[in-house]
Length: 371
Image 1 (cartoon, rainbow, N blue to C red):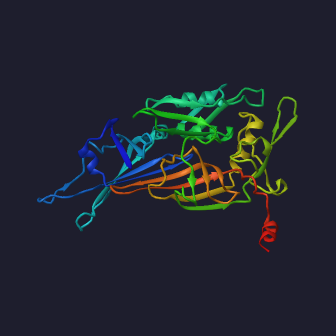
Image 2: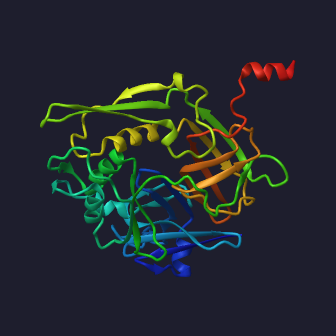
Image 3: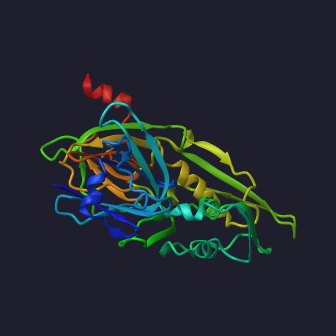
């Protein structure tokens, strides 16, 4: 059984307000603002006046929250943030006219003011704590970042929005900056942390067998992504050059084996000096190598109501019922939730930076097994 709840201005929607909404689509993706689209039918009355638009309810920047429950699990928040756009579609045929209410998560509030930022002698996680300090964000989950390799004075100067600066700082540290809906309306969570590799409490995705709950599972492997990363730094004090190179063994993987068959076949990259003296060199090369390590990507869709969970990006889910190489844990990178009065569907994109045991067999081994 599928249930959903709507909140307008942090207040539960009434039955009349729920009946206004025909369809809901929520797009969620890592490293991007989440967006919901609410389809509301409109029409004309006997006097030819358009009805169905509740201006006060759908006023710009009104907070909207959507929660969903599947089976016996608790409600899962899909989005919490302001109305940022209203799209109107007028048709001459009865029942075809719609307005679309567009909602984005509370990271919107961090992305509205373009300014010049300057932070002196502050580590990146300290800057993140300061930038996330806005009324719409009730709490934060921020990982501590190391001090730069250089012993010179550090300063961060950047033109842009707070969200752009947060993502720039996160990128160089191998972290991710984003905003999640909190446990209660109007209490979003500011996050500045790395991807997890540990599965949570989501049900397993299964492609074959009696517990099948997947309608499709389409993997793609990019052999060019895994990369050995090197960077250099020149000390202005003693003119010495410091070099750091990434180590595949130190990366957090989602499985027991590397995503490549031979380390010698991986690409090589030299980092440009865009970070200056503001970052630890070991952290910089590890961040870029970790980002490039996600060589496997899967698109798919769950099978109707057979999947008893709600997929959400940044979580890890276990996949079974596929071949030995691809069964295992995956990072949820993108989810589209589509909800109507009668149906609910989830399509997804998963990513992985590892292979499971048994993945080392090559084509020759396979041919020998067949013939």
